[in-house]
Image 1: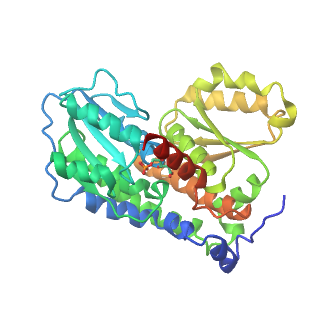
Image 2: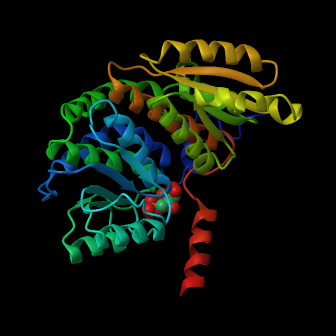
Length: 359
Ligand code: PA5
């Protein structure tokens, strides 16, 4: 399949990417730094004594902040973190639960419904939003709010939506040393920015190259257990929303107990799939072996297999590196397909129809 837009032609890309998604994505390192500043703002956080769980409420581009947070704190937070994506608040949420309600627009009904319930149950709540009803409720109910800049797509705000949560957990004394790691990660991301930038030519730019290779294929993104699995989920949703194509994710070792078998039939479909395996240093040695064996078992069934290995000295750098790589790839793929990466018309239409029904 031919590229609709030359990924080395900034003017052509700029014409299609009218809202500047590529630039926003490219500025991810800067966004992480600003998010650290937002997370450090004078906000009166709940007390930490007696907490037994953390819950992050959020959907879609906001909800992924819960998965990212859970991955970032998994090595040091001594209580469970759950990402709640829906209308149902788990029964264990109560006065000893710290609840982060994350909605970029502030108007997402699932998040607001769970928030109402959490408040009713006496949970200790913190909000992250650019405005909308969530910001209004925060004001009304005296809920601490990390207010993030408006005017972006939620999925282009991952730094703003996740980093303040990490800052809050650290300020409450629940984790230590993570903020410093996030600061360090921003420095590393600066180096990646040069490599992944729109001005970096396709031959030297691994994100443009992967986008070109993916043209005409259905991406299936596998991650090894932990941060790469979360990154795989992010890649999948970014392919959906930016490039407007179907994409799927799964993770090792779980997929060895089901999906590995699923490549045996529908040869015409399987051969149109491009498998990207996300990996990171420190992966379990049995997972490494599983990846090798799995690739051997399914290589004749899928169209292509490639790997992207996270670079970075710690879990924060590695997760952000994989996220950044996938974000940039998805925007280049959108442009190569002739798609404006920004609009998500179907999400908006769906929300409007739902609103019309409940009005
Ligand atoms: O990317 C999107 O636009 C969606 O996934 C939204 O993030 C999702 O619908 C939730 O909206 P919000 O992030 O404003 O809470």
